[in-house]
Length: 193
Image: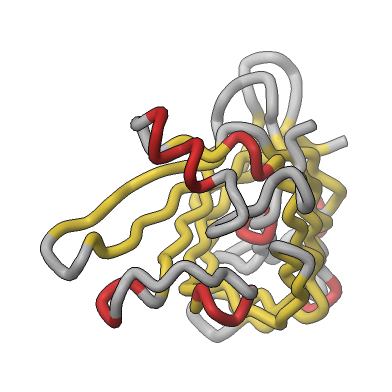
C-alpha cells in the first residue's frame, strides 16, 4: 500500500515545457520499479542533518498539458515505513512522540490547485493529512522528463520539495529551535494508464 503523501510531488505538472495534449493523461506511480522516493531531512541539534525516507507509498497524478491548472495529484504514505537507517530511532519515530503510527497508519496528500509559471515550474497546493491533522501545504515542483519507455509504456517524472513545521501537525516532541521543521523531497515517476 504504497500510497504516498507527497504524491504531490509528482504532481506536478508542473512542469516543464509540456504543451502537447499527447502528454496528457492519468499516471500511476511506478511502485514496482523503485523509481520513486519520499526523502526527508531535519537538523540534528543544529550540528548536522539527519536523513530518512518513507519506503511504502503510492499515488496517481493527472496531467492536463493544455490546461495545467486542471492537473491533480493524490498520494498515500504508509507511515510505518519510515526509515532513518537506525532501528531504535525508527521505532521512536513510529511512536506517539512523532508519527503515532498505531493511531495514524497513513499520511495523505490531495492537491487542490496547481499553478504553473512561465518557466514551467509549478506550485502544487493541497491538503496534507499527517497524524490526524490536515493542513494546506505548497509543493514546489518541476518536471524532470517524459517519454516512451522500453516496455511500450509512456512515463513522466517530477520532483517536488516542501518544508513542514512539526508543531503544525501536532508532533509534540521538542527537538529545539534548530529542528522545528523538516524538509521533504519527493521524486516520482508515473506510468500513463
